Length: 179
Ligand SMILES: [Zn+2]
Image: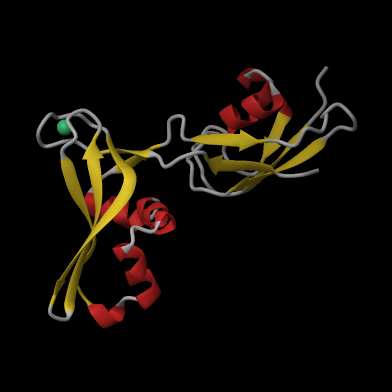
């Protein structure tokens, strides 16, 4: 059976309090970096914008880093605002921790399930693969993927990890036949 795949449909918003309007939501928009060279040292920021008042904030990517310590290809990416680099920096937990924001994945991801029917032979084993680090509650994801109620998921699904705790790491579960 093909795996289920969790993938992003766009970049998530940031839960980050605006110092002007106190809104708690920011976006990377089109995705821009700012690079500031000072001799052999370099600062790199990822720019984000408050969704309410448009105020721009800078998230520190590098602070006074030695130019030669940064891979030239990566450095070029910061100069040209490479969209893949914007995504990988935004999704880097280190950047989030350093700049004190969390990601808001609401409506920014989807679950792709293969079109096969599940009523052939029980039990059915399903692998869930995360292409992006979207935190999901397994019970909700499985309920959505199988079209079952969450009560039924808790009754019929066997899984190595907690069904109630959010995860963004690949996991496998088994569904037993219903009554
Ligand atoms: Zn604001």
